[in-house]
Image 1 (tube, one colour):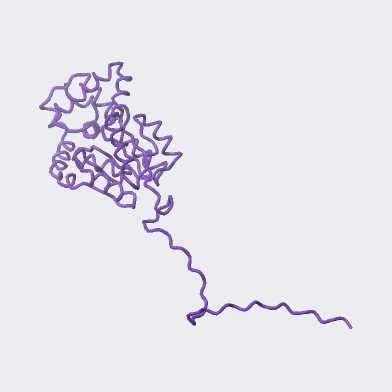
Image 2 (image 1 turned 180 degrees about the vertical axis):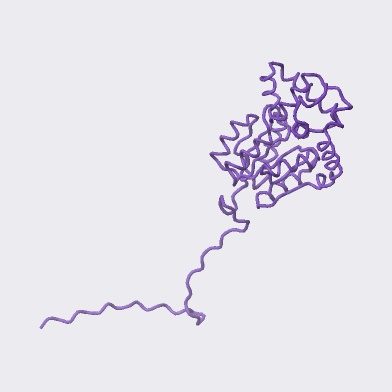
Amino acid sequence: MAPKPRRPVKKPVSPRTDGKAPTKAAKPKSGGGVARTNGENAPIALVLIDDNRLLREGIVEMVRAQPGFKVLAASADANEALKKVREAKPDIVLVDFGLEDHDSLSLTATVHAEVPEAKVIVMGLLPLQEDVAHYVRAGASGFIMKDASFEEFFDTIRAVARGEQVLPSELTKSLFSQIVLNAAVKNPARVVDAVRLTSRERQVIDLLGEGLSNKEISGRLHIAVHTVKSHVHNVLEKLALHSRLEVAAFSHASGGSKAISK
């Protein structure tokens, strides 16, 4: 007669000495911090676009010395920086308001359209509501003034990285300037009646109205870049305006140089 198969014997569970039922091992807790799309506790990734070498290198050193931030690229070449933005998709793109050879407004719009997850912060902006409105419509999420403190600089970056929109208090105090600008734009004839513009200055006004940079205007008119800067300065002085954007708005409102009396 064949022997019966033996049943497997279960090993007894060792009782706890404290009399409590055995428990499962607890999973280790993850570290604190704010979870973001690029990973929990990941540093805020930045791309800097600024054509002032000393300022650019200074900002890079300052950011790298601050915990929680990472510089992916820093360049004066907007096209080179845009390529990096498309590839790396940073959290923040810092754009200098006063780029010499590139239109920072168009650059802001391009980043916002092509890489919407990369939030644009405009640096060195003049305190004019018209400029702010243009940049906000183009997709800017924050602004850092020229005289911002160390804390304001990094607080703005952190806030924008969290999805907030940041407007410095200085810019909220210039409503009067905006009202004056609107009056000038609505009545451009009254402004030009009091000034005398050269034919070259009227050409520069038209090209600023097209959104061209100093370098592009230089190529179009076959004159040196420093000469273009001089004409832009004269136009701003004569029309009592404060920025290239205001000149562009003025050009559109007045119908261009052909509508401006000599």
